[in-house]
Amino acid sequence: MPQTEIGSVEDIPLGQMKTFKVQDQTILVYHLKDGFYGTQNLCPHTFGPLKMGKIIDGSKIQCPLHRARFDIKTGEVIDWANFPPGIQVLNVVRKEKGLKTYKVSKKDGKLFVSI
Ligand code: FES
Image (tube, rainbow, N blue to C red; front, top):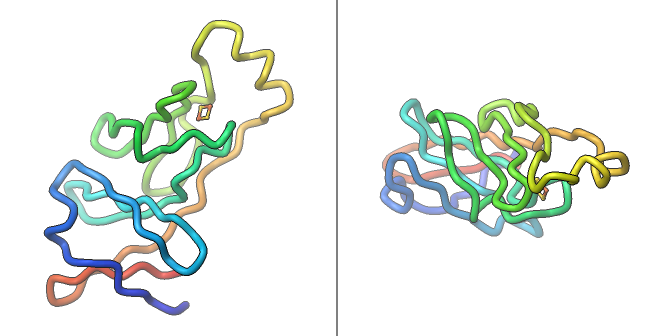
């Protein structure tokens, strides 16, 4: 799997995230306590920008629109969209779906994503 250099480790302070355009995809890269991780940026529910969400419990991302939560490392759904009340009607057609994840590695202070 080819690796693409996306920047330096200083670009993303610990506990924060940043998007990078790689080929035709926007990848959200997170700096967690144990390293760097990448996921798709758009929420699979109704395409909310996860980069505007928040990292919770040190390893989950919460979508800013309807509060779906995903495991950053595996992409698994932790909680599906549950806000505002009544969103369950939309969930009938927008079924649970996890995030695509990307391997992010670092070497000599540079970050690389495998895509
Ligand atoms: S768009 Fe992310 S939870 Fe709805």
